[in-house]
Image (cartoon, rainbow, N blue to C red; front, side, top):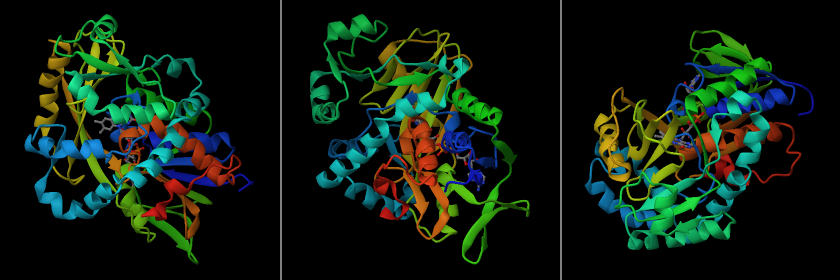
Length: 416
Ligand SMILES: Cc1cc2nc3c(=O)[nH]c(=O)nc-3n(C[C@H](O)[C@H](O)[C@H](O)COP(=O)(O)OP(=O)(O)OC[C@H]3O[C@@H](n4cnc5c(N)ncnc54)[C@H](O)[C@@H]3O)c2cc1C
């Protein structure tokens, strides 16, 4: 695709925003379309981390051993809304299959190929001082309450080291020297210096959108109800209002809602929601400069600046339409106190978001096999912020004929 094209990007989450920005930089006429406002869905309330060492599939064998124990606690790191289980079974079976050793190796390579370039792609995309000042390269600490708990994760850390990621095991003394606010029960940690985080993922993603608009991306707020086709070729999109928009190319980046749009073109993808929660404490009064990860609790603590923190995480497998389980967000406060002691909860804000999850953890970054002018970019699960810029760059390269010779096969939509 050498000539400049009219491109519609559907979905203004962090993934769609980054796709629109990269395509515009390639000189295309780009329109970003969303039923809501930029970065107001899942990209609004995530934990703000560039979790670049997360190369292993979520179904890696170590995790599976922990699942039965987790499920006994309805407010633990993982919960299933049991009513939804029959509908979820096909996804769960594929998730289990992705945990076989040969598959784990394949998926790890696919994730590493994306994550190894994430910081470079973000630096290429984000150039304004206002955005760069929100991004902190301070690393993360994964926290354990015993040597035994740390040892249980040893194979996981080894695998990351084998891929070149620094994962530094800290002695209790070193840990408390670098994170003095930690409760004495936390005795061990692994430091991953390559991690970074932003003060507020909504403001950061919105900032990238504003940069893209300044660079010439157009914006339309409307729901896309389907594709406009002519002689088997997609020539634009239909809007819920009844009007149509013509385009040479369409990018589908609608997060957890992408399954319906893909299906309308005949592509069935096992996309489910891994719902996660956060509580944001604007006046917590906690001084933190590292991103904290509770290895046992399945939650993280984001330092948001000026004493504010966000406690986020856990997985709830349920329909994206199911009502929120706010107790899962509220319980995060008590869990965080076990790590960092007391803090002020005045002004606490609770939130739930739908991580767009594919069972093998890899996202879809793929041309539509039977519709050459449609590209899919969704299914980033726990890593949409981390991989937004990379996905945008890869989508732009794919449309430009893959000048860098990147292997897109692991992310193909027809791999299932
Ligand atoms: C609790 C929690 C913590 C997380 N922490 C992190 C983290 O620290 N680091 C990280 O990298 N990731 C994290 N994630 C994951 C990350 O938030 C997601 O992967 C990411 O936001 C997905 O972005 P997206 O653009 O694909 O989807 P979304 O942000 O959901 O955007 C999709 C957009 O598509 C629009 N849309 C849908 N259907 C249509 C339609 N038919 N017409 C028009 N518009 C439509 C929606 O309105 C929405 O704006 C976390 C997620 C959760 C829930």
